[in-house]
Structures are given as C-alpha cells and as structure tokens.
Image 1 (cartoon, rainbow, N blue to C red):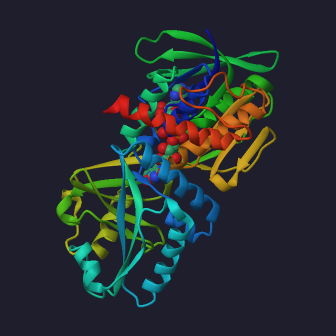
Image 2 (tube, rainbow, N blue to C red):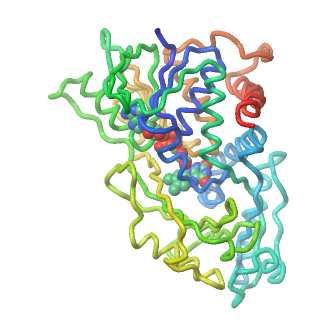
Image 3 (tube, rainbow, N blue to C red):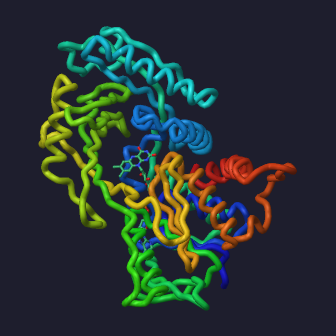
Length: 424
Ligand SMILES: Cc1cc2nc3c(=O)[nH]c(=O)nc-3n(C[C@H](O)[C@H](O)[C@H](O)COP(=O)(O)OP(=O)(O)OC[C@H]3O[C@@H](n4cnc5c(N)ncnc54)[C@H](O)[C@@H]3O)c2cc1C
C-alpha cells in the first residue's frame, strides 16, 4: 500500500498531524516505537494554557495563539480538559498591581476565548482560596484562569479519532531505516518491537515527529544523502528536563492551583490539584543524554521541596512524595541550517524540510498541537509532498475563499463528535 503521509512519533505532535491529515482524506500511517504519548506527551504539567511565562517574555503572538487553541482543546474534549483557577500569592506591596496588570493583559489577549476574569485578592481572600498558604508576610494575591487536561487520555482520544477517520496507527513499531529513489525519500523500514519483524512502508511524504529524538532520523537522512564521508548535520535539539512530584491533597487542600511566578532562581513553580492529589513542579534542567526513562536529579527534588516550603504552611518532605515523573522538552538549538528550512518563531515550534523531503517538526507545546499540525500539513502541501486534500470529512463543506487555517479549525469541530463517541 502506498501512503500519502507516514508519521514517525505518536506524541501530541504526530497524533495531531495524523488526525488533521486523515480528516483531509489522505492515506495516513503513524508508528511509534513505544506506546502512544509514552514520550514527553504524558509527562507534562497537564495545563492547557496561553503561557503566563511567555507573556512576561513579551511573546504576545505566541500567547494569543495558545489562548485561542486552549478554547478548542477545552471545547473538543470536556471529559479530559477543564478550566482551572490559579492564585498567585504576593508578599511585596507592588506585586499585586504588577502581576494584576500582566494578567489583565492575559484576559485582554484571550478576548472571547477568556475563561474568567482576573481578580485582585486581599490577603484574606487569598487565604480563603489557598488555606494552606504561608500567611506570614502575605499581602494579597491575583486569581486568573487557565485550563487543565489529562494529557495521556487526550492523546489516546486523538489516536482513536484519527483511526476512526481512516488512519492506521501502530505502536511498538520503530522507524529504523529510510529509503530513497533518485535522491527523494520514498519510504521507511519499521521494526515491530515485540516480534522483531521488519516491514517496508512506502509513502509520498514522511514526517519526523519524534520529539526530543528527531535528530536520530535527521542524521540518517543526511548520511544517506551525503554518504558516510559527507557533511554531517548539526543536532537541532537540546533536551531540557522537567520534574513533577505527586503529594497528598492536604498540602494544598484546595481546588484552586498555586502559581509562583518567580522562584529563588527565577523559574515558575506550580502546585496543582490533580485526581485527588497535588502535582508539584516543574524544573528546567539541561541534560546531555536522551534517555527514554530519564531519572530526576537529586537537586531537582530538593529544589521543588525547598521552594514549596517557602509557600506552604506545612512543607512536604521526601517521605511525602508518592511518585514523580520526568519529561524531556525539545529545545530547538539551531534556527536554520543549509537544508530547506522554515523557522516558526511565533509558534515556538520548528519545521524543517530536508533536501530529500524529510519533514521534521519539533518544539511547541501540547496546547498548540492542532496549530502545529495545520502548519506541518501546510508546509508539506507547499513543498508538493502532499495534495491539499483528497476528500472532505462528513458534514464539512468549505466556503469559497476559505483559507487553510479556517478549514483546519472547522474540521476540528467535526472531530468533536468523534472524540465523544470514541472515548465515552
Ligand atoms: C516537563 C514538561 C512539562 C510540560 N508541560 C506542558 C503543559 O503543561 N502544557 C503544554 O501545553 N505543554 C507542556 N509541555 C510541552 C509538551 O509536553 C510537549 O511539547 C509535547 O508533549 C511534545 O510532543 P511530541 O509529540 O513532539 O513529543 P513526544 O511526546 O516525546 O513524542 C515523540 C514520540 O516519538 C516516538 N519515537 C521516537 N523515535 C522513534 C522512532 N525511531 N520510531 C518510532 N517512534 C519514535 C517516541 O516513542 C515518542 O512517543 C511540557 C513539556 C515538559 C518537558
């Protein structure tokens, strides 16, 4: 069977591309060497957010886009994503007006996609929202709204919906080799990780959506094109590790999340209610390896516990940690190389198309997976690797003059029913 598009990687990015492509009527296959979302996509902070942190960095376009995408995620899968209130406690007089103004701006950027108004809280109101907060020196707080979602469940819903739209999705199947004809990529070999059997796969377009592991396939591609003595490619990803810890609910004792905008070393820290417990995190630590099961560093655990102790009346200790998970974030190191390239600074993700036609996408965040998928398919289409669409999804009739983006958002609405049907 000849596929229109073969996607390597079944995390948020790959699954989003598979669903979007299948809904366009393309013949789609997706493979993952492990389980769907087993990589970074089940190890996130589980927030569907515009990113208050990016607002502080002045990245307005990124925040605005993520706020719009947040609405689609919440609307498409209400069983796996809900609005969540956050309180930022303040301990200095200027912090309420300072953070308050920033978060009012967040509301403004969200516009009609807003989930609730930002409120400036008195000391008493802050304590009534977060009763276990350290009261000494507290001056007040700022309450704002964002979203929370079950990342692993959402990923499975995407996979099932893509399958329902006709995509073939195979887990425990690893891409091992790429195949070429006249200098163009025409397929790959994949290996069943359970039986060891190897299968050839032919596809007009191949998307490398392997998260922090994208450089492995990129390197194979460059070696095949340039030969072993030829020019090597620069790795595009630098992994950065984030650790989350789970403690009992009593440490927060609230349905509202605590957000610390600036820890002792300038990072952001969350304490978020989650399935009857509380998630504490996260860190942001560079690491040099790409371990499939990265372990937390001792100083990361100490850091989260120490910072939590600055804000919570009763601080959790090592013995209170029920479990923890570690995720690797793909930070894109190079803005461009000599391959044909597209850097999407505004969306914080990067798409590169190599000389042979290998499409690599990495970076971004869970919240913007749909916009990333739309971008990937647009680039594949512009690069003549896929046809725009083969057929239309049921009930979908584009109007004359509608652009690619409008079409993608509309299709998302037709997925909604399928997401319900396949997961409830
Ligand atoms: C600590 C942390 C917290 C985060 N919190 C949030 C948050 O709250 N909200 C938010 O919006 N974003 C968040 N993010 C970002 C978000 O989680 C990631 O952007 C997203 O999950 C990346 O998805 P991905 O599909 O690109 O990568 P991955 O999920 O890692 O998927 C890549 C897949 O490729 C597969 N693979 C690799 N090599 C091969 C091969 N050769 N053959 C076949 N398959 C292969 C892997 O098994 C893996 O499943 C967070 C990130 C981190 C690190």
